[in-house]
Image 1 (tube, rainbow, N blue to C red):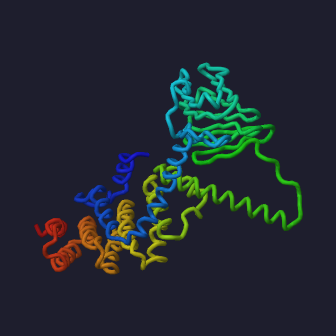
Image 2 (image 1 turned 30 degrees about the vertical axis):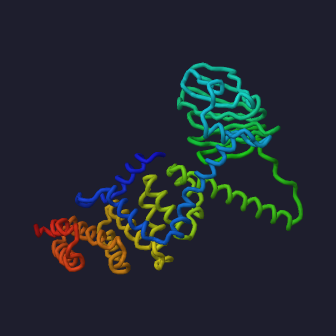
Image 3 (image 1 turned 90 degrees about the vertical axis):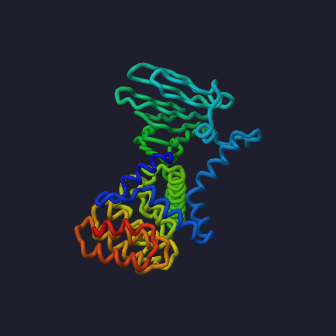
Length: 372
């Protein structure tokens, strides 16, 4: 996802029920100013959470493109992250594209009609970007594995007798042998055919195997979720979070990320519990006032204007020295005006005069109180 798309979503999250006078860009600039005053060590740690996936992907791309690539290393990252030479691009008539490295991979187009496209991955790996078309079947065959799609983007790689499938966008069905097809959505991946269930063993061995499997699955889910966040794929990250709520974590960093994932995927109501957990469990953290301010914005966007007022009031009462305190007072006055509470709006205007006699937003607050 790119910057403009995120800005558009912020606009939708903003206080729709309140009078104009504040926009998402202005809010984000205020929050950015708060960030600059926080402890650098904490700020760097939070940035590492959001950008670790990007740095990892960049490192993989550099290794894949460099001259000394490790023999036998997977090639799908190079296919997905770097443009292929002209000889490594297969463009089908419907606009779908297949990218591969001709020196290590081979793809054959078996059938290409208006109702069916069938290709075979003979060796190596291929990155597929399929144009959506419900009237057309699209299949990729790799050994005993068949990947069926309608419109999506994914990688398929031959790994000996098995096949690796990883979905970037949309969803695919992966079938092999006589087992039921596996449905993979964006961010999911796996090696097929799937291994058979382990043979019965002693109780202790079974327990250890189940524990190791669960731990590995949780680690893979966490890596995928963080990668989606780093690439601003908030819709996929939200889908992963909905399936596995434990991904939200318990730290302030994790909870702020989870709240952003919910807000920026157009699920603002789901951000509220994460922000409230920060205020309940981490009220002494230096980012708590930012969480309270963001909670006020989110509640206002949901039409819960009175609850939003309470959240802005808490910013001022619990963190009066925060750089957000002045803006919280303005937001509170704006909400009072929207509710038609002239007395509260006037009281807040008087408080603003006392607290910020030279405040740059004095006229705005007085306008909410109908004093100008």
